[in-house]
Length: 96
Image (cartoon, rainbow, N blue to C red; front, side, top):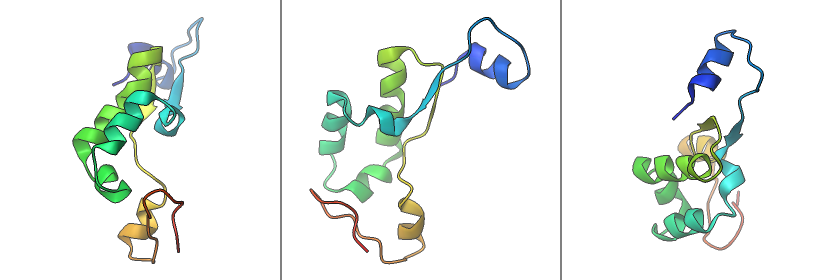
């Protein structure tokens, strides 16, 4: 979801107001994020669920009326997908 302000700005139009976008991570403190996260058995399942990734991506936009967002994922999903011995342990930080 993006606003026309955001799209117009990246296409070179000048506006009085700058568009505001945020990375999805900034919403991890939201109660609605925590509820969706808790609905999956583990972090990998959560990241690999496109409906839930979309839902948590849009949460800060819906709450704060930001102009755009980056789709939810985790940077460590790349080494995990490449089988580089990254493990996500529930209730703990990622392990190598």
